[in-house]
Amino acid sequence: MGSYKDPNHGSDDVVENLVQRLRLYKPTPVSDETQFSVKRAAVLVCIFQGNNGDLRVILTKRSSSLSSHSGEVALPGGKQEETDIDDIQTALREAKEEIGLEPSLVNVVTVLEPIVAKNRMIVVPVVGILSDTKAFDPCPCADEVEAIFDAPLEMFLKDENRWAEEKEWKGEKYLLHYFDYEAENGKYLIWALTAGVLIRVASLVYQRPPAFLELRPRFWDMAITGDGSKL
Image 1 (tube, rainbow, N blue to C red):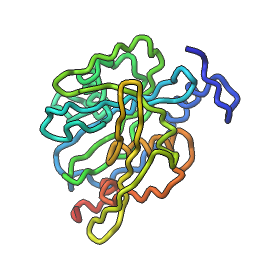
Image 2: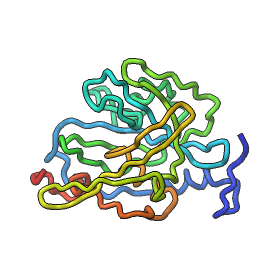
Image 3: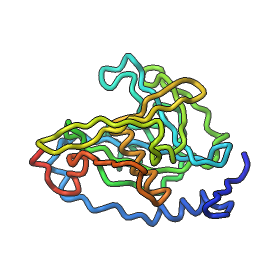
Image 4: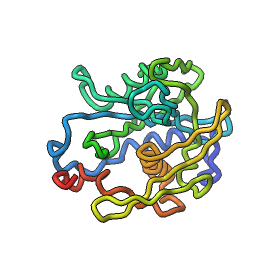
């Protein structure tokens, strides 16, 4: 795999620069998580450099036999267990269980603001870099994962192969974004909270907003705003 030359930076060190910059990111302080469910989960946004030099993210298609969100595209991750010391350990443990990604291969660079799902579960995005892609041998857990694929991170800032559905929550309109993507092993639809996380991460990585109106659901940010009693 060749070195990554970003036309916007003219440098071979974009990935290393990205690591250093993301390590400096300070998430907005959380107001009060006790307002929400005791249920907590973490997802791993694992970024790596593709063969063409682009930045890509690892995704999964959940098993069709699962009781919830079956067949949907998701980031590796899951619910926190009592033995997990923090959100990072939750995300790395789940990624190893689901796709066989060894925690030692992932350089965790930052943890983003928690998102509050409609069921009041707190979901924490953990951002990591996979530098040695050759050391990663994908091994999906058959009970949980139907397929593993990757997609270019920048696609979540572009108004291409994307559509949105207008929703309403307590009188306030918001948009759910849907991204169509065709990988080598099939066609996938990336949407809802997973798409929202990737829009956020891509905006942070590329330091620019999406080329479309995002209009996030307000309840996603309630751990920050402290409006949990209104959910």
